[in-house]
Length: 113
Image (cartoon, rainbow, N blue to C red):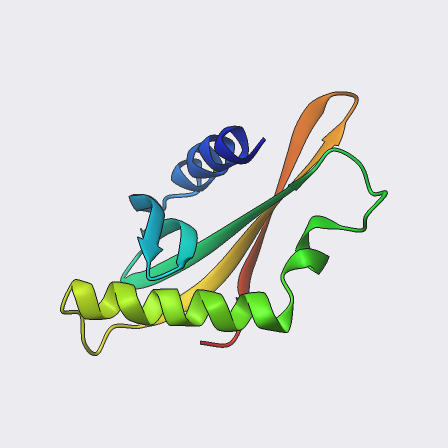
């Protein structure tokens, strides 16, 4: 479901005007699902999908530990690409399924950089 969800999220974000720069960016032992530009802002995006609510809402799985890991990977991205003085944020795209169809929701500024 991960690859399918990330592809759906990328299409969803592009329709909202985002430009996808990278998919599955890895740094050290971490990964960010999508890196994009939204206007002048660099956006690091976590995609969370759930087939049911049995284990809670998708965004509930973005724990403080996951946030910390995403921040470290984002710092790695900035370092590897020699990016300085760039406005950045973290968004989360959630995917739930209703009647077998994906429902996507964008949470901008999901947590502080």
